[in-house]
Image 1 (cartoon, rainbow, N blue to C red):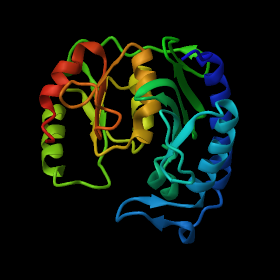
Image 2: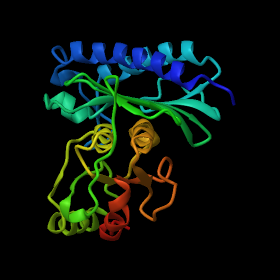
Image 3: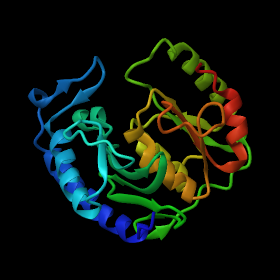
Image 4: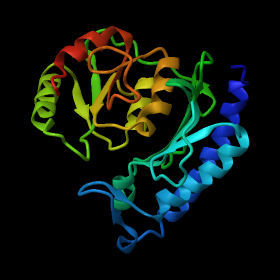
Length: 262
């Protein structure tokens, strides 16, 4: 497949920023009455839905032949080549006024991630990458940290909406990593966590019960920044496998040994 991925990425950034502008504006307007529950801890509002519609409209113009896999299911059009969209990653933060949430978009061809763009909305930080093109933050190249050992690292994680009986083991993993690192942070946006690994703010990240739209964009950005991304077995099934580990190359094996979620 011959595609100008750099140009597609540039246009995708513009689309993501348009959705981000809408979300930023609506943050001052959304009320408790606008909140709906997809699950006991899985919240959504009109902001997620409308932001997704903006993205679908804009991204269709960029690659008309691509399908869509979206969190809010405003469109049903699965194809081998498709846009994978999370219009508002960190909705619970957004609705509570906690300033860590993002918009994440990836262009994926049969599980091969071609383009990834993540906009952290509050700080207006746009992370992006295209396959074999490197990773960037607001136009500047980024790289993962040079940390060589878990004992020198700062790690991030998340707490899934649906626990599937794994939370006790997840807490055990967190406790083990806490004892062997500089600490663990939980920001509430998987896309942001991945991008913070990509630019060296975090040295590693792990989470389970995720969906492709949570991590596709950020995963490419980590890889293009020189990081490693895997599932909990160290394999490549992190897009559809509902689990992901991302880190600097040197600490991946150490980090995997501490994760006992299964």
